Length: 111
Image 1 (cartoon, rainbow, N blue to C red):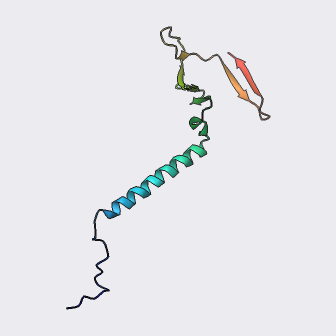
Image 2 (cartoon, one colour):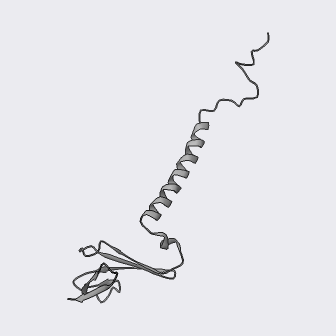
């Protein structure tokens, strides 16, 4: 009995039900990398991946404000508070307010 070549091809691989998962994993990895690159460029955070020193202020002007600096390989986190702790070098207090004008000039007003 002769087999119909349209219905059965001996060169095809066996149907593997898990074969589709490898393709889904690849697609998910490409999507995750693209999302990470898009978020990094949207929030202008490319300096995090460079060798340059930088300073980031999280939640400026609020009680839970945090200042993150990187100097070389060292990353420092400072949390402003009303009371200074002599044992912790990572505490500070608010000493004034800085405003940036439309022309780019920054004015500091001490409290």
